[in-house]
Length: 79
Image (tube, rainbow, N blue to C red):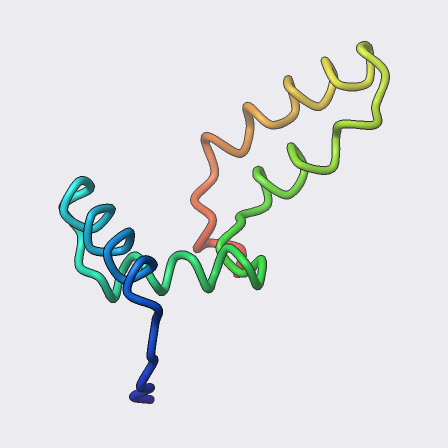
């Protein structure tokens, strides 16, 4: 769905700079920012990692070992 967005000049310059630096389009940069804000760009591994900050060292180590399995699983197979 097309959306028109008016940005302050300073923010548009930052988006242009980031897009050029990363070799992406402005649209890709904006969509990534929106997804990040909405929390829709995180996969299961990232979500577990982000929530693990309150764990003890031992619990966190167990999570690290468990997360290694996510590296072997294709996220698309489970969705």
